[in-house]
Length: 95
Image (cartoon, rainbow, N blue to C red; front, side, top):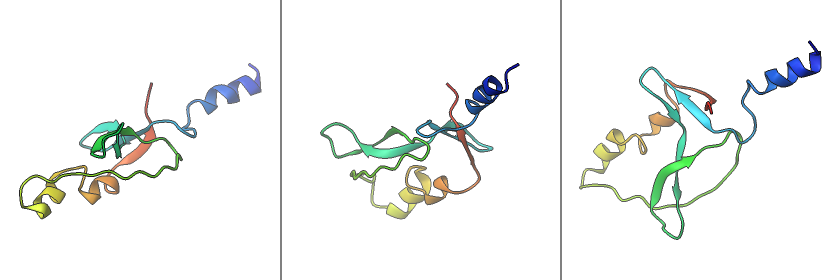
């Protein structure tokens, strides 16, 4: 085969700018979602899929349940800081 066509087909195997990011850990595999306000609402929705190397800024409001804010920050994966930096690998989301 043609070297150019081989290289072109291989390029699609790697993650490219804007590709949805996948998180893979020993416990789960899913898309990396970031909190974002949707429409005219200011409440955070965790359905915005992060794109590889896409730089964006967003502000939204999240209400915490009950009075135990420390427990909420530990138990809720969206708020737990370690959800974003421990024990996972990033890759290109298939599809």
